[in-house]
Image (cartoon, rainbow, N blue to C red; front, side, top):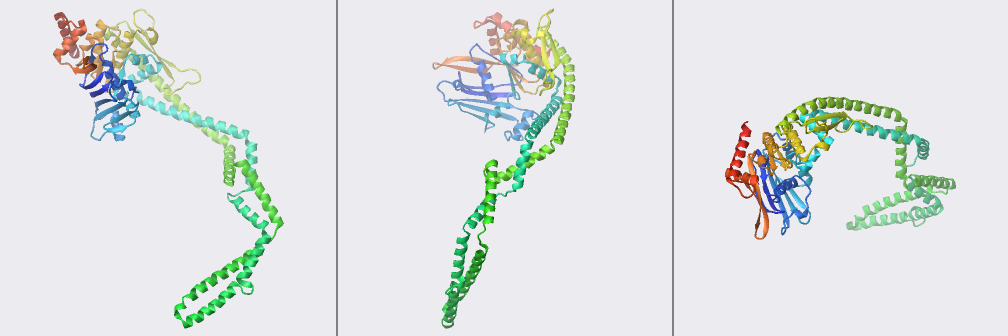
Length: 563
């Protein structure tokens, strides 16, 4: 439940701190006092988008903070622990949001900075806010179908169906893509086979063009390379005065030196090492000379091969690496084409089986919804009687989808609430016949019917009683009090019949201080509460008659719990 709310520099609120008890809590005050500001602050703490003009004039930042007490089995607890936002023994969640005039906001969960999306996940899990807009959502067929499922606790079956639906949709997409791919390959088969054969026949290797260019250079300059290598060999080994012959003379002289002066003995190993290396080099030059020879036919062959590789490179990607990749892709495409019929048959069989599972679960869900519709109608009939609409009737109409799309993520059904508020009037779609006050009571009746199935700990009703009065207002107050057996219920109201039914009463006031308007709140004690109820009955001038009427309303409100 929402246990504490703190607001600073938010619209008309300079500083405000409110401790909220469990049960049914009403918020009252004059029009414009700021009751809806408190609801707006809670909505912002649940991820609603903020505007800079909500920051109080003269301040650079607004700060909103709320503390929630959670029971350990609550579904949000494990999720928050998995995100390391809640300790293993913690059950209190503190949400804080700072709005900046620059347009940026910072959000915190249990003192840890988190993205705004974390707060959006809390909406509908920690708190449900119901106002005039939310009542309008009840007119949407998707919401009406969700209400039927919630009443019957179809979560497990609907979850099974949704998973099967997603698997079928995936299988259908894969099969459709495979069919389109096979068709495309068949249309391009002749070209694909030609291109694959062209690359296969050429059989290029990634570095072949570089190696061929080097060979081409050698073939074109064979005479010069042979002449240069011959000259080098002569100088090293064969000519008169060759380097190796001269080095042999140096070796003999070094031997004589070492025999006379031992300090020159280290020269000999170095000379011999050089001698061995030069001999190896001379042999290498000789072998190179012998390999080099002018070969016009080989030159033409290399030229032709390079020309072929260049054509392939221009056609298939600019490099031989790209040509080789293209060849692999073409072979893979042709293999896919050769096996496409078998593959397509298997994929279509997967789709057919997935579709059968969707149909089976959708039929189960439809049957369960049809049974539930009658139970929900009966339950709502009792709620309408308690809400001073004894002649109202609501029929839950479940119909199967038609057209091309028989199935959707919610099943194969459409739900429509047909409503009649008066005896003898035909049932018509709820959206066409319900007045604002009637719609408020239908919403409240539905919430009461779903109370035992709803895990959201805090429900907020923002003037859900608009458009009603008298006995209907008293009935709404009783239902809100009854709803508090399952949830913490906060309600903004102008009706004393509703306010008198609450377990606790918060007064929202607007005052001028230091030439500034400020909103403040206070939790009323028994005496102050009676005075406020009296003002709600008759205005600022409170008479003894109004006080007696207020006391009677409060007495009746307290008795309602024991009745």
